[in-house]
Figure 1 (tube, protein in one colour):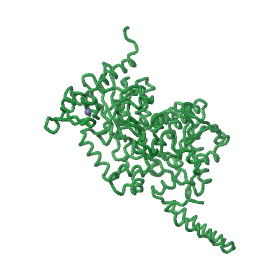
Figure 2: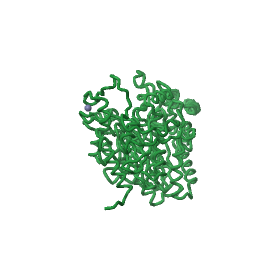
Figure 3: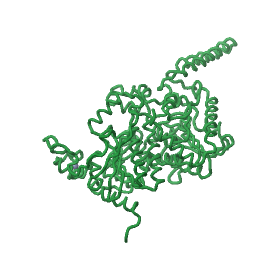
Figure 4: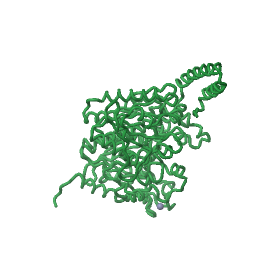
Length: 285
Length: 316
Ligand SMILES: [Zn+2]
C-alpha cells in the first residue's frame, strides 16, 4: 500500500474536480442554493448561503487543517480483510472494493502528520463516504497507528470523527475496536499528550461510545449529528417525535457533552491555539 | 408454567403428555410419565447439542434463564448491593455490590433483566442508562482502591435507546466504563451469561479474561438489527434474523475461535432447564480464571488487559 504514503500536499483546488458543466455547480443539501463548486470548495465545503457544513473526506480535511496543507500520510498496517467471510445482499469484499473505487481511499480512516500552528501533530480523519465511516479492524488499526505515532513523536493526536457506527460485516471484531481504541487513548494519556476530538456529521453508535467521547477536548462542527442510538430507534422506543435539534452539536454543547462548537473556518486557528497552550506551556510573556 | 421455544415443540408435547399421564393418578400412569420424561431429557440433550446460532440467541433470551440475582445468590456470600451514580440517579438495569466469592472479597457488577413483569419494568429489561454505566465506573474505582477483583455478568439486549439517556451522555458513559475497566489495577473477569449486545455489553466487558456460556450470544448488534440494516429494502428483511445470526459469528464456539473470549462454560440442555448445574459451572470457571490472575501486579494486570485487546483481530 505504498500509494498511501507521501501524498504530495495540494495547496489549492483540493477537491480536484475537473470543471465539467456537471460539477461546475454545487447544490446545497440544506438550503438547495446553487453555488459555484469553486466557491463552495474555497469556502471549505461549507455553503456560503446558509453555513451548512457538508461532509468532507480526509484529502480535503488534511489540506484544511495542517499549516499550508502540508502533510505526510502514514501507512496503516494491513489487517485481515473480511475476517468473518461475511455476505449479506452483497459480498463484503465487493462492498469494500466499491467503496475504494468511489473514494480513492483504502479504508474509512486516514492518518497524516504535519504542523498545526507550528506544532507537530498527528491527525486522523474518518471518512463517512467510505461505507458510512464504519469502524472495523482497519479503522481500529488506523486509530492505533495514529495514536502510537503521536506517542513516538511526542505530538498531540487529533481525530475528526464521522461514522454511522460499527462495521456490521465484521461482527464482534468491530465491537472489539471500542476497547482497542480506548487502549490507544490510555497510551496517549500516560504519555501526557493531548487527545483532541472533533466530531463531524454524523458521529453515532459505537464510535461515539468509545474514542469519540474520550477526548481531553471535545469539539464539534456546527449542526453535526452526534449520538449513541439512532433517531428512528429512539422514536420507536419512546413512541414520541424527537424535538428539533435533538442530537445536534448545539444540543450536546447545551447538555455539557462538548467543550465547543467551532465553524470549519475557525478550526485551524482553534486547534492551533489548543495544541500551543497544551504543548508549549511556557513562552516569553 | 414453563416457556418453550419454537424449536422445543417436541419437548413441550412430551411434557404435556407426561402431565396427562400423571393426572390419571395411577402407578401405571406415573411410570409411563417418568419414562417419557427420561426420553424427553435425552431428546433435549440431543437438540441442545446442535443448536443453530439463531436458536442459541433465543435460548440466551429465554425468560426462565438465570439472571444476575440468581448467580449472585448461588455464588456470592454477604452480597451487599451498592446504589447510585452520585450524579443523577440509581439505575436498576445495572446492579452491583460487594460480597465474597469463595471467601474472597469481590465487586460484582452486571445487568439484571428481571424475572417477571414488575421486576422487568423495574430493571428496564436490563437495558442500562448512563447512570448505570456511571455507577459501574464508581464501583470499579472503589474495587480498584481496595484491591477487590471485579466480576461482571453481562446480559443485555443493549443500552437503553431513550431520548433522556442521550441528553445525559449515554455514549460518553459507556466509553468511560470501558476506559475504567481497562485502567483497573485489580483482576477483572467478565462473564457473558445471556445476551451481550453492542456497546451496552462492552462497557462491562473489557476484562482480563472473558468467559461465556455455551448458549450465550455476544455481538455488535442483535441479529434482527443486523438484518434490518444489511437487508434494508429486502421485503423479507425481518425474517433474515436467522441468516444474520449465522453470518455474525455470535456463538461462544465462534468467539473462542476468533480469540474474543477465553473459555466456554457448559450449560447442558440450556441454563433455564438446569440452572443449578449451569450456575455451578460458571462458579468453577470464575474461580479458575481468578486463580490464573493471582499474584499479578496492578501494572501487569493493566498491561495484560491492554495487550489482550490490542492483539484481537490482528491474527485471524
Ligand atoms: Zn445552504
